[in-house]
Amino acid sequence: MNKLFDKDDFIRKNNEISYRLLENFLKTELNKETFSTIYRFLEWQNFRCGEYEGNQYLIQKQSVEEVRIIDIVSEEFCDDFSQTRISIRVTELLKLMDEMAETK
Image (cartoon, rainbow, N blue to C red):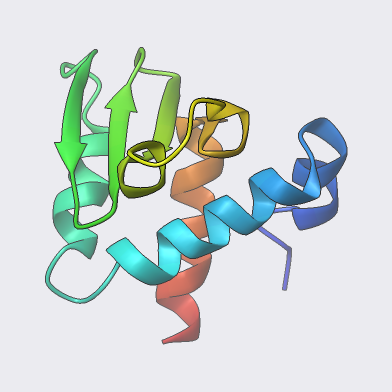
């Protein structure tokens, strides 16, 4: 089976903290009720920008190619947002979500 999402490559391009933030986002926000809504929000190319607000995280669609994931709960308690925000390519996040769906 080919690996859809390359964790090591993501960490190399970003850092370990960003990967942990991404992991926490996936665990916190993705469940059987929200998965398809978030997936469609990401893949729909006619929707070029916008936001999806979850329980702890906000997904900002920057373009059809990139989203920013923001830990809005943590940002209430800090001034440095370098550890509460990550940017990721839409295709990368969709691949990761596909991989998650296959394992369930």
